[in-house]
Amino acid sequence: MPWWADLLISLGAALLVVWIALMIVLSRSGRGFGGLAEAARLLPDLLRLVSRLARDPSLPRGVRIRLWLLLGYLASPLDIVPDFIPVLGYADDAIVVAIALRSVVRAAGPEPLGRHWPGSAQGLSVVRRLAGLDEPSTG
Image (cartoon, rainbow, N blue to C red; front, top):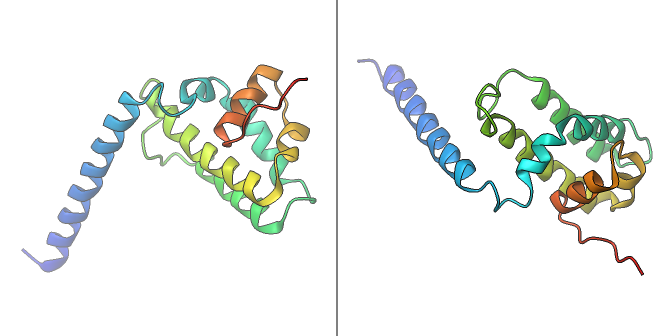
């Protein structure tokens, strides 16, 4: 067999092993990832939030570029876990969104999240947790 066929088979096997490992981690971590199930339910509002943040000229250019790349990933039919798999299909999207939101908060602070959030106060609370923020004190 040619060397390139061995390489393709090896890469395919490695991707399969990584995919299976990710499926196991995601299936066991429904509660451990800080609200991924909640984030999956909030996905439409999260998409609007990311879109609004990506168009905000007050954010640093690098942050906006990352957000546009995130929107491209979310719109792409190629996913780590296919979206037709119940719950887990959207959990990988929620993980990628959470990582991007943490990046936005590190670069621009938490204010843009509240300013652009289109959903409820409870939804914003989940988004703040996904972004690694503590709940604001009330009093």
